[in-house]
Image (cartoon, rainbow, N blue to C red; front, side, top):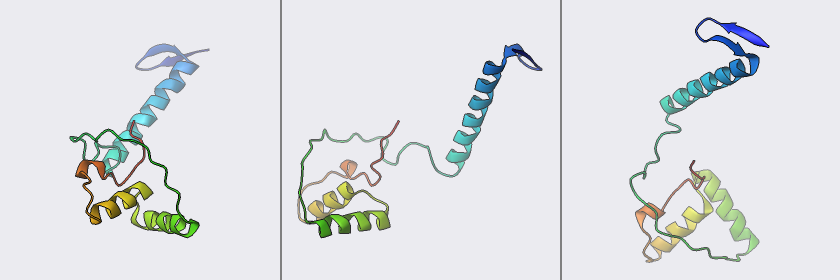
Length: 105
């Protein structure tokens, strides 16, 4: 079905819904940036070192404690482990100490 739009002339209802969705997304993006979300990450200018996976089996109580501390500090378990390794004298580059491990888009 065609719908008359003041600025855009005639368009389909699907086009109108898409336009409304885009408007909402744009407003949400602006609001999020004003609140400090969605901007460039703090270490945006730095590149992380290539990584390799390591599997570590730990007692359940330690696994749970890592989880609780990570939640309390709002960091990842990976961050806590790297922090402990750095405190133990191992070299850990600052760019690799990413507190929030969520994937960036």
